[in-house]
Image (tube, rainbow, N blue to C red):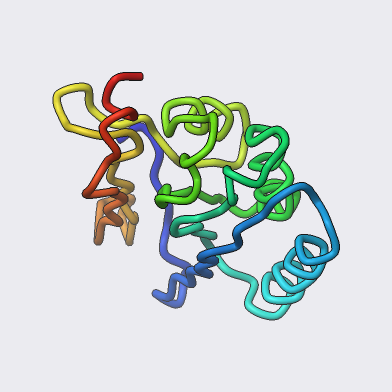
Length: 154
């Protein structure tokens, strides 16, 4: 738990969740998705962005790592902290969750962690939300319960 977030002065904390983007190679549908994400972020002004699975459609990506970078680029450019919990379509192609976690950790804006080695899976972590007096007031748990067998081997 090396990173933490903070409640606003009014006690609020806003999370925008994007799920099932199924990003491929930057085509027309992907660009429409990007525009929608930009619009949502502008309207909501969140404290955190969370992608909850199937960020990319790895079977249909010519380069899944590049596609993942493109899919999370809106979050990274926004300056808003963000994280990804991987889904089944993220790693059906020639990429593992460990591979995508390495790509995610290349970004300055991510709050993700690989997770403790004694726990099964990649990307299981906790982020404290600090309140008054710089003390933890809540916690956000990020976890992918079921991992594909091949991901445990990488």
